[in-house]
Image 1 (cartoon, helix red, strand yellow):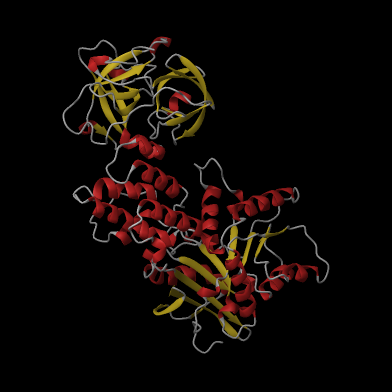
Image 2 (spheres, rainbow, N blue to C red):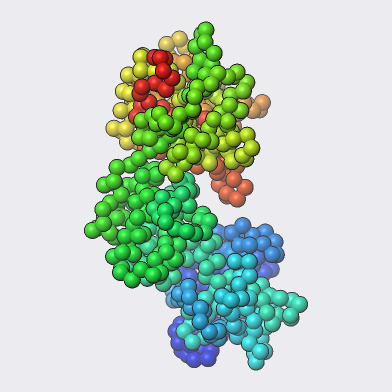
Length: 571
């Protein structure tokens, strides 16, 4: 497969067996062996294929299309795919250049492609630089004027490497047919890593060690997209005048390591800056994420205070709707910090007609929300029993804003438990205490076609370790009332009606729901349900959680019961 060892093209040293050929259906392209299991190539090379064949140093290996960016047609962003080899490769993987490898001068570059079905391949000499960037996605590549080869069919996915060092700087994306293949485009490392974050495990950086970075990236990959990394960054570094629009916590860490710390010379201070972001993130993670991050600190930053040493703060926006027999329905919106009512951040109670609840909430909510928005609050609706099925998470922050509340965790609560004299409070406290001590929850499934004899349902609820109920559909008053009275702290149900074809689909979705919440710590339900709602409709997710559609979460943490009550005189 061409010259693979020794000096190679123009005196390069190193092993070049990472340059591979990719066959996918009728498409032929090239690829980059990034580690012993993965090959980077272009998405259009494997378009419409689930399997491919990779030729590595003359050895043929099967592969599957493991990941694919959101690319569909020529001109789209994200022309990147990752192949997973059916068996590990013994050839040395590519060595990747630093992010500034082409920052000075225009070093000679080369790429090996497979035009005209050539098995051995053909090398093209190229030049490029960051100054030739296009749309923040590609760099223009130009063929060396003295070279006879051009960028043509068979070069897509080829790794572009420096001739003097052999280090990969990017990947061939496409060619310019108007210029007869003498010019084209490459995806530089900065773009490739955006579509495949695992590439960062192979890139050379001077912040943290490679093993520490690898573990942290994998840990943060499990963290939900909320809290927003942009909010966490502003909290950790309020003095930053500018920051890009970040899409993940790992991207935020890379931004700090590669941009914010460039002028910091002392290594210990660099570690402190990176740790500062993680400290701001930790209290906002689910319990499992906090524990894993704490373990990471113990291992890699043993001299730095661990995030769990800092008291976690939690914020809420509480939307409270009260209804009494001979009194008008009233609405109050208030901010809570660590469970304590913030009197100065409370709306004046207003009377409302129940058909105007949505409009009234969207009118009062924005000002109160802004007072705690940097703390990534939970939005809580304390409602009478008859209103617990309202689609609160689908409402917006105000009538002119298209941002739905479900960008944050949204839960409903039993408004009667907020009254200090409520007989439901001690039962709810006792069950919540059992949930927290157990650490992991085991939801009880209640199907929409389940029937109970008198007393059976109350007997089902009686054990103190019953803390989570998962209904396949909105529970009837005969099911919801006893559960509220028994102090059940966590309940979930779908607001969608049962399909006319029967209850099999209801049961399937309920099983999917319980699978996604089983073993969850009670503190983590709001964020998990927010993630399920998000993935249920996301057009780019390969695995959509249908159980997240029209999903209500009843979640009543006694630590968030404000005392004294919000509306003076009401007990």
